[in-house]
Length: 348
Ligand code: SAM
Image 1 (cartoon, rainbow, N blue to C red):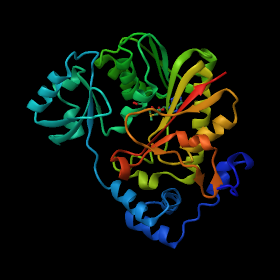
Image 2: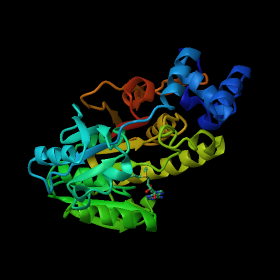
Image 3: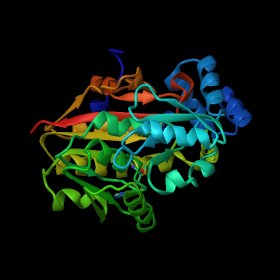
Image 4: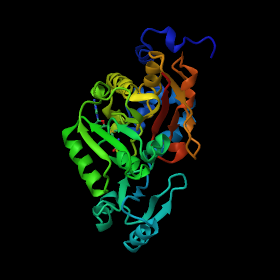
C-alpha cells in the first residue's frame, strides 16, 4: 500500500476515483446477467477482490430477508406477552441475539404488510423493520436516559423511536427531517409508540448547528443515501443510481455530517450511518470530513457481532487508516441488508 497515492495528496479524491471506474468486458457481462449498471459491478470487484466473491455478493442480493420487530418497551412491560400474541396470530419469531427486545420473523404469515396491520402493531406494541441492519445505529450510539440527543434525518422514525426506548422516554430527543410527507409518518410513529421525550422539527439538518451549536450529547446522522445496500428489498436500485448521483449524495452527506459535528458538544458522539455499501458515500464522506477538521476522532464501533472493517484502498487510492474503524454489513457475509456505520467523537 505504501506507494499508492493517499487521499490527502489528491485534490478531489472522489473525482479521482470515479474517473478510474472503467467497466471491463467481464464486468459488463456480469452486470447484464444480473441486471445491474456495469459501473456498479466493476466497483464490487475492486472492493471484494475476486469474481467468486462478487458472485456470492450478487447472489445474496437475490435472496429475501426476513422482517423483524422491536418490542416497544415504552408500552410493553413483558415482551413475552407480545411474542405469545404474535405466535397466536401465526407468526414464527426468533430473538435477535445482539439486539435486546428485537425478534426476527422467520416463518408464518410473515409478510411486511400483514405485520403492519395487526392490532398489536396499531396500538404500538412494536416497530416493524423490513430487515435487521436498521437496529444497529441506535444500539451503537447507545443514548441513555436524561441525555440531549438529536436525530438529524429521522423520518419515518425507526431509529428515533428506538433511541427514545433506550432513553426510557427521559431526556430530550430532537427528531429532524426536511421532508413534509415523511414528517407525517414520523409523527404518527412517535404517537403510536408512546414516545414522550421527542421534539419534532421539520428543518434542513444543515442548519441545526446554527440553532443548537455544540448542544447535544449524541447525534445520529442516518444519512439520505443511494440505498445501494437495499437491492434485495428494492431491485430497482440495480439501475437507479448513476455515478453523478453518488457525487451528489456524497456532497449532501458531507454537509450533514459537518452539521452533526457542529451540533454535538465537545466530547459528544456522532454516529454516521447509511443503508449503502458505496465507498463514495461511506468511507469517502468520513475521510473528507475528518481531514477537514481538527476537532474529531473516529472511534471503534462496539456492537456484539462481528462486522467487516471499512475499505482502506479503493481504485488505487489509499484512504486514511482510521476508516478501518468504520464497519460495513455485507449481505453475503452477515445475511442482512448492506449497511455502513462510523462513530465519531468531537474532541474540541
Ligand atoms: N433514520 C430514519 C429511520 O430510521 O426511520 C431513516 C432516514 S432516511 C435514510 C434519510 C432521511 O433524510 C429521509 O427521511 C429524508 O427526508 C431526510 N433528508 C434528506 N435531506 C435532508 C436534509 N437536508 N436535512 C434533514 N433531513 C434530510
